[in-house]
Each structure stands twice: as structure tokens, then as C-alpha cells.
Image (tube, rainbow, N blue to C red; front, side, top):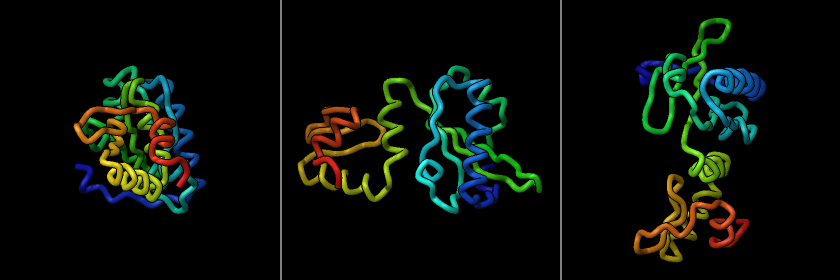
Length: 156
């Protein structure tokens, strides 16, 4: 169904207000930790959607908010504006163990992550936003963002 929805582009102020509304809504019903991430976090103007990362305490309550799409990583909602035009809200979710890694990834500019992934590859490693830094044998080195940054050379 989400493929059929034509989402409205948002100016940053509208996106920030929508993020605040959804942060409060999710905090009341279904999530114990919520952070604004991606374009709204970075102040991208305009932005295509509102991205939130959360730790879910009640998945059924998230379902009751009527997502237009759901997969193993997120719920996508079509939040109508005053004219009824849908605005895209993506609620990304994970457990407490993965939260710091996902938060770091979702707040890191794309170009920066690509640079770090390239550095990892040049050193015979692989950088995965879902797992962390992995050695050439497929073993996890670390999923700690601070350690990843340190190993791959700090600021780019």
C-alpha cells in the first residue's frame, strides 16, 4: 500500500513540529526511547519525511496507529496535514543493544558513512549499519560507534 501513497515534501519547521508531535505520541503509547534522526535531525530543508528511532515497548500499540507499511526495521505512517495530504513518518526500531549503533548511523551524514565504509574496506574490514565493524573473517570487531570512529581514523 505504501507504494501507492504519494507523500508530501516538508519544510524543516513543519517537519520539526511533526517530529515533536510523533515523539510525544509514541512516548505515550508504545516507545520507551525516541530520537529524531536523519534529515530532520540534520536540518535538511526541505525534507521528504520525519525519521524517528525508538525502542518499542508495545508493538501492538504501534500497529494500532495504522502504518501504511511495516517491515523488520520500521513502521511507515501517512500523517495527513490540514488539507489531508499525507506526510511520511518513519519509525525505525531496534533493541537497546543496537540502539547506539542505529542512532549513530541514522544521524551520520551519508557521505561520512560512505567514507568510513571505504576506509573499512581498504583495511580489509566491512562496516555494517546493522551490525558494526566486521573483520575479514566475518567476526564482529565492535558495534560501538566511538570505537568504530577511532579504528577508522576519526574525523573525515
